[in-house]
Amino acid sequence: MNDMTEENRKLKLIIFPGETVVIDEYGKRIVACPTEDEAEEYIREQEE
Image (cartoon, rainbow, N blue to C red):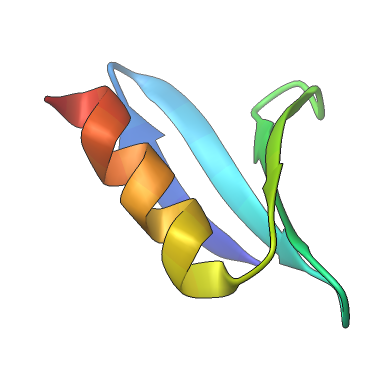
């Protein structure tokens, strides 16, 4: 899992064979993306 911070909220990526899921610090699923790159892009967009 990769840790990323968004406004003091820790986001983690969980990488599965078919998708990458972004979860928050409480384990709540935020979004699922087809690739890890798209999940990381989603997080960057939320930081703007």
